[in-house]
Amino acid sequence: KAGVTQTPRYLIKTRGQQVTLSCSPISGHRSVSWYQQTPGQGLQFLFEYFSETQRNKGNFPGRFSGRQFSNSRSEMNVSTLELGDSALYLCASSWRGRRGGTEAFFGQGTRLTVV
Amino acid sequence: AQRVTQPEKLLSVFKGAPVELKCNYSYSGSPELFWYVQYSRQRLQLLLRHISRESIKGFTADLNKGETSFHLKKPFAQEEDSAMYYCALSGSDRGSTLGRLYFGRGTQLTVWP
Image 1 (tube, rainbow over the protein chains, first blue to last red):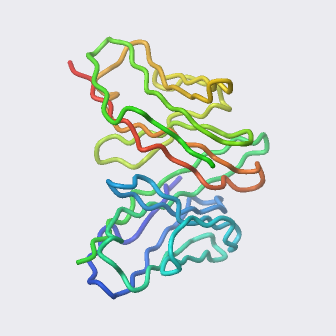
Image 2 (tube, rainbow over the protein chains, first blue to last red; image 1 turned 90 degrees about the vertical axis):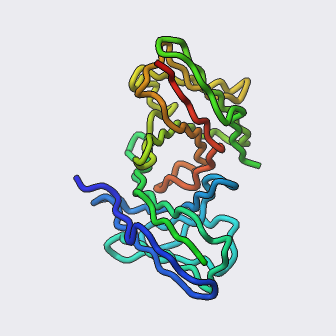
Image 3 (cartoon, chains in turn yellow, brown; image 1 turned 60 degrees about the vertical axis):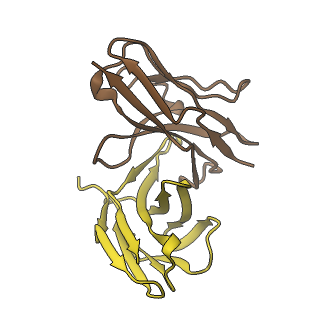
């Protein structure tokens, strides 16, 4: 079973540009979440999608947006990039079993550097 | 407000010594608690969750609702246990989705030979 795949692995962008990151969840997983990881703030929740609908949203400005497609693949977009957006962006797919157990599987992340 | 606190940023022990990584949380409902581990150059992966009450790689964690803690323990640490450990809390209403995960800042465990 293939794991969560994030593309690209590395990105370098300049301030003011926009960027789109992609995440392919594990087959059968309908929930996809995005996290920003930085040395200063740790792991911060961005948003969660389930069946193409945003279910939860973290405390990030509107420049951060996302969407999910019918095949559960998800994209995250950051517009008007700032230096502070430099981070590792992690995607996680998850499922919830009938007995309520849950598990999130993480991708290897996309390292975004804004210069 | 939901919060996960890992008081130790760094923790070092010698091989064969017991290890305990502390995790405290605050949450108004009934949370799901998890421990995630990130080995060097590897992706973040689930180590264990409180609902399963299982032992993985010799690690156990018990949810103490009175003390709002979910400490991770291992009686005899091994060098391969060296990694970054994150405690996480899910505030899901146990619907269809996992919901938002609240992570602690992580504890870097180093096990010396």
